[in-house]
Image (cartoon, rainbow, N blue to C red):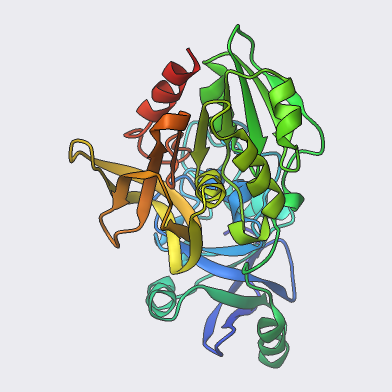
Length: 355
């Protein structure tokens, strides 16, 4: 961290647990959000610009964050969507030929508060046992932070997609095949994968099925996104109207919404899946994929759908397929930005469905 000594800061959880640290990133006496931990060893720039983290504060379990700095190519969206960052050690001087700016300066420029010097090992163990929860952090006194943490909002029941979706349709790529991508918080790496298939029209989350079908697409992608799928009845209804009429590929929140449209149910995990090292088994042949994940909610009981993938850590449904309707989805991130590329074959499978 550059710029001399840092001001003392505290991280206070909604259950009253307190962690000491130092202020970093953009100055903020008090910052709040739902605190989750991410187990990725790298890819922090992609994580912080992922719209799926809207409403949340991200604590990195890896002790050294910022080692290779930041650059102009690794953003997954046009801005940082998380509400704050918690780290153990924030590297003061990055070392990478790609680096254009240190992470601390990058956070300051983008208005994102952070706290460093936190015992993230103890913090992660606490969240693992007690679950993701609201928090407050900053340079204000402990009393003020306790009050803010008690009033901070979790993601339960909140429509966070409306805050991150595009306000109007736009087109990416070119080619004879036409894909419509619902933007629930779509990532740039995901769009780059789709551009290889043809012309991609990205539409707002509120777009009705009739408007999508009027575009005569060869397929529809349901993107990732933040928050509680149960708070999105409009998109769920639109997806239900599309099933059986056009090939569908859902990812993360898109997976949850497709399953909900099929009559399935969703529930909130204790601390979610956030990281680039989650093992998932493909049931068709038993192969294990190491996957990138970022979600707090999961699905269960999807009528008429075949479960295709399961999480080997906790048995969560990681993929489903509705063969008769040419629709499938996965809970994890096959575009892998960041993360391993084990699951990018799913984009090829979707391309084959397009004809």
